[in-house]
View 1 (cartoon, rainbow, N blue to C red):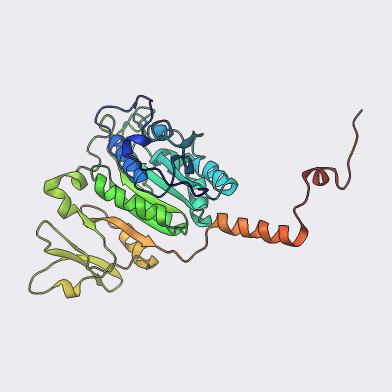
View 2 (cartoon, rainbow, N blue to C red):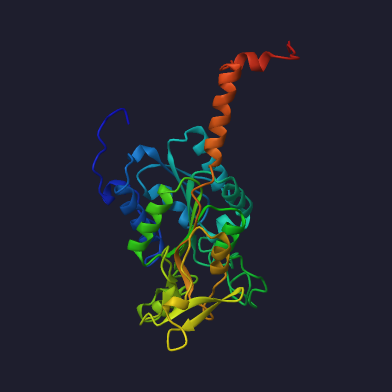
Length: 338
């Protein structure tokens, strides 16, 4: 920026003087820490970041990150973020909100920011519950979930955030979990480097209204068996002893044990550029399969919406001139009101 050297930041430089008002033990604390550590190691100034949120517990993020930000309205964070990015494409824009906000009332906006490929980063904190409004079932709650709004158990089918993002045309799709701050940082750096919409689903624990929603994926003794860490160009191996893997059986994925019948040579190699494979991986759920973590899909080839708009405006200005707002207002039929 204007030749001025970039300051050396520490994570505390991205903390504010606001009291962090989440319940003790909430997974949001770990995500906030990962965000602040990520920003401190990126080649931007604090004033070049904007955090936008909707409504919900996760939506308090803009208060706690020492950057520009906006706590917007329910479900409309993607629309607000799109406007920010169009107004100033040089800014790095982040959306942080929950599964209720981004997938229920905001589901339509989430779909459209993904298909437009606006160059923003989305952190969807998924705790499978409405936490701020005290424990109603959310779009990601499992069937049969008993909550204050479904005392007999939810008769609903949950939305799959990763499958939705892939189906909407997202160009960077990933998943992490709140307890793994180091891995979250890796995903956030990759998301920020990606040109286009980056979508990260974060498994996050609401220890008050939906504690242990992701227990199987978070515990040291079970995590290696119930999740699989995807790495581009490497075979899909999982298990505490790395003795299991994923292979294709016809058109279906299947989990196999690595023994005399199957070896690593039989396993799928992860290709993060393969959209069809990404969709298959997004459908894997515990307990039948390990659930994928890491970068599931990445396509850097599609030009983002904000760049296309900027290019369109520049071409029009070059062709027609800069124009004048007053001339635009007064052209054509006008009336003078006495």
